[in-house]
Length: 270
Image (cartoon, rainbow, N blue to C red; front, side, top):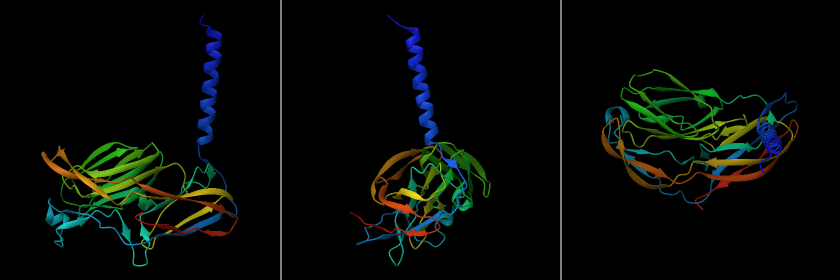
């Protein structure tokens, strides 16, 4: 026989448990005194793989002013000393620490010479991504993943803002026929993220003392195939690149009060 009282009690327990779990997963901003610094590099080991390029077959006067004819997809950028640019390095499952201080330039996307600048973005959860186009041609920013938008840019230097409310990865492509354009956005719920520079260097500051897992995330560099797709704006079929899955590497790290800890990652094709 159905017992309404028992059911109500059981449902209340479930709700309270779920609420407690959600509360524990929220990031708490605290005053960090004597915080530590975690820094290091991400470097490539071994022979570089063949990196695919796609033909610039639309708007060459805007997209290809130097007549290169093809465009590197920018999925793996390795400097002269082996540093891997555009790797996201972050602390996993940190629950409390400093306030959001991610760089503003990682929250502003420009479309310039039919490229996305920057290629990797970091946007705090519930804050906005600013987007504009410096190109005098029609671009349409198509996002899928943790955010889904399809935003046309028919005018130069017109800024559009969209709130990124769900943490996770957002893939960015052009739905205006420029099939080689690609970028990634990470929508994040804490500030302990860094994108490696041209030397592969990263830095996380004001880290509360403690034990953490440090993750190096790379979007993946293999072009698996090209798939035909109908572009609604150009009303023709285009070949879109399909890439391999992102790759991650993890290391244990100890943040010490007022000290700098160095952690280096070495990644490869294997």
